[in-house]
Length: 230
Image (cartoon, rainbow, N blue to C red):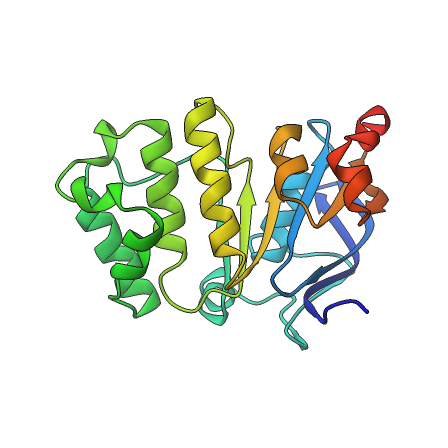
C-alpha cells in the first residue's frame, strides 16, 4: 500500500514564451520518500522544480501540497508552507558571512534554531565567520541546504545537488539526505546515476518535457536497468 502523497503534480504544461517545455507532466511524491528525476539536459527537469516552487506558472496544470492546491502561489508563501527549493547554481550571498546568510534565512522563515542546521552540517558552525566567496562548492551546498531547512520543511526540491562536487563530498551529502528523508520528502533532479541508485525510492525518467517512466522497483533502480532508456 502506497504512502499518501505529500506533493502531487497534475497535467503540468509550462512554456517560456511560445516555447513549450513541459507537456502534461503528472507525478506523485509520497511523504518521506526520496524521488529522483533523471533525464538528459533540456528535458525540463529544472523547469519542473521551478514550477513546483512557484517561480513559473503552468498553463494549464496544478500542484497540490498536502491536499491543498498551491498552483500560482508566490514562491515565498510556498516556502513558508514547507516546500523548499535549492537551485543548481550553489548560489550564496558571497559578500556575506555564513552567519549572515543564515540570519537572512532565519528572518525569512521566522526560525532561529540553527542547531538543527548544525546537526546535519556541523562544519558550518566552524565557518560562521567565513564569507560566502571563500567557501568551497561543497560548503556552499551545505549552506544552501542549511538555509532551506530553517522553518517548516516538508519537501526539499534539490536541483543537481552533487554537480561539481568531489566524490567524498557527494558521499557525505548522500548520508545527510538519508537523515533528512526521515523528516521530509526529498525530490532530486540528478545526473549522477550512482547517487540516484543509492537514494531513490521512486525514480522518474524524463524525455523532451514528458515523463516516460516511473520506477519503484528497488532492484531495477539499484541495477541501473533504466539507464538504457536515457
